[in-house]
Length: 77
Image (cartoon, rainbow, N blue to C red):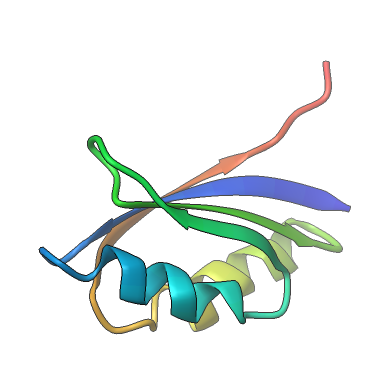
């Protein structure tokens, strides 16, 4: 199982709407709108890195209002 935080920038005024829509995506375990340099922070999980990439590109980045994403895989050291 691969887990990651996905940091999202949105168009002005779209953070709550984007977080709400992403929260319903399969593989997303948490989606919250926040303040700071990013507007939404998502925690997601997938079986492997390839599936995580597909989740981000095909489902999350396709949500209207998103301008940029940064995927940060979780590591266990």
